[in-house]
Length: 216
Image 1 (cartoon, helix red, strand yellow):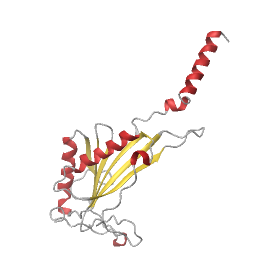
Image 2 (image 1 turned 180 degrees about the vertical axis):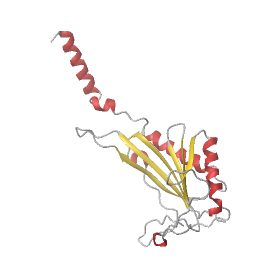
Image 3 (image 1 turned 120 degrees about the horizontal axis):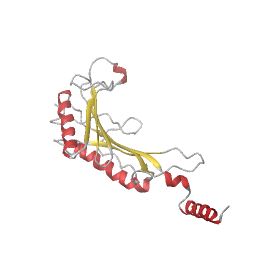
Image 4 (image 1 turned 120 degrees about the vertical axis):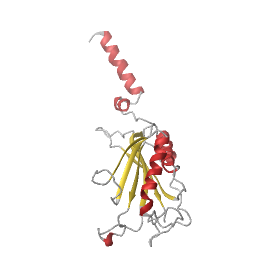
């Protein structure tokens, strides 16, 4: 082998060793874990800050799923990060379109790219379906959804008819973010003191707050 070729191979080998190998160089997340944390928080606030009167919610905190390891066992630097807020108010069915419009307007004011409102079958929402989801993408790459579900929440109630109230969940997700643990995202905050609990002590996420405006 010519001296020039050998020198090139040695240089490439040294570069690979210094940078942690070749796979990490190709495994580049689109944003840091800190950016994912802050952008998701901003997207959720950007969804709910336009709702007036304001409503309380349960924070399901950050859920971080690490990507699959590489073929050689090396851990992936990628992660899928999501967080959701569950509105604690029992939203009256007659207020559903108003609530959806408030969230949509808040997105538009902040420059989010807003998609159509759809039912679970992908049919455009026309006000008659029990369940509707609308999604948007923030300028900094967060995918956010709001789902308003007026179906019966009691599994024993069966599929007949609508529920007396609508549940609302806002969720934000970032794909291909740098992996980070609790040192970045922190620990799940304690439940509000007045939040209901199940018999086993876990949080009861069923809406229970009667709001003078949104529940009537």
